[in-house]
Image: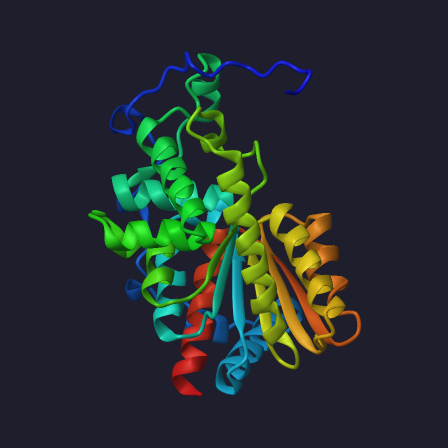
Length: 315
């Protein structure tokens, strides 16, 4: 028995997500089929960042043609910006070979899939202590992961399996469900205490840790294939994914697998230290190239998607 006292969670007050105001609804999500930014990119000057985007698109297409991995990692704002269908389409096309995320992506993806809305007003809810206490979201995810722990599933596989196999009104909007359907590993890298699900008495630390650590090992296995031409893209995770990627790279190299001459890119709204050093610079130091693009997700991801799709269709 430890010497320090833990907080007692028995008296937590929860509410139904159906009564919670949310800032993002499925009606706000972008529909890739109704847009075409590829022509816009073609009309831009072939200099600086535009040149880098076109070069990265070529690297992705070449990786696809050579059967090399194209791995996409993301943070929660990609889902909150209504961009899931772009990534789902790339999975459907067979371009993406692995997905990875932090824990927030699971929460937003789960809420969109189940309830058609996500993203509460944090500042307002924090005042009365109601932030993060939607019963259906947190107890639902925690119970899935507790069961997954017993069945030795990874975190992402367990959530994807649940969303794909159960009655889920907006299944087509879910990244995790699509990955499970297409048998694409979706690894979830959780930092304990950072997600609203951890506030609840239903959170099982052993289950969360076991399932997320299993995902780290699955992720490491996916990284092996990046050698000589694979591509790793990170959309908007400033802390967790850069740290996970760096550790995965060193695990793979430590085990004696060659990991050189691959390509990485970060798309984010700001320039951050960890993504720049841990994804763009350090891993590609001995071969390959890293790119960093600064811009809003709701602009940059559609632009990149349409350029990539256009190139694939005309390759």
